[in-house]
Picture 1: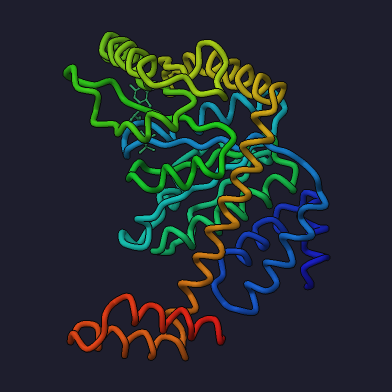
Picture 2: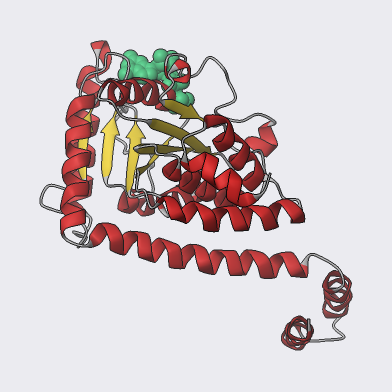
Length: 325
Ligand code: GDP
């Protein structure tokens, strides 16, 4: 099948075509990459926009439980929901965070839900491209919301927030008064903080954690892309389905405000530029790791190590060789 036909089938909402297209963009084979690049150009024809929502949280915080209940709620409202994952650790652990079939049991049976495990690739740059292209494919296929899940391991939050319209940080109630060691950089990325497990015995701790984070968010400089009251911290119970409707109302209100004020499109434009830059970097690094340049680099590295050449001169030689192609 050619790229144009596959794109047409994806845009027509054919799930098998979508799954196949994602497999294609996940492939590192040069002929697959060429076809994937063409596919992504055709996909633009769909001219559809989903709400791309990043969701980050450490293992055990309740991401899959939340996606299941939140996803089912949205499906109940007549929406189509796609779930993707960025999991840079999947290659190491040998499994994917969405590989477990027991996760999101109800959602995975819904015809209006599409769940895709994370690609098992070690390098975050590669995972990022594949997920970003999978997001665009789901969007073209007519999904209304795309949940992009990641485990909080530092760098992956940046990757996910760079492909999301909205970034949600999921936290669990803290035992003590510590702020769970959430890094400032990650707090600054969050549009909403949801403190999960606000039920039963954990309710008081969840409320306390929520007000701690609400306080911390107020200390962070107000960003131009935020209306009054955002970024916001609130409590939810994914298990008891509490607070999810309120969270959805707030998400919609935030996005509506950003659309009206130009921030939605501006963010997407910035992201497109960011990914353009990343693709160039990834491509250049790829060239350095392939022959004929690889031998040159290795040889120069040895000379630098032996003190026979300065690092600056050796790097200049590599860049000159790159230019010559
Ligand atoms: P993930 O690793 O972030 O995907 O977390 P899971 O969704 O697998 O949840 C981890 C554990 O927390 C499971 O035992 C869930 O049943 C439990 N859990 C998830 N959400 C809630 C909640 O809202 N309340 C309570 N009490 N437990 C929850």
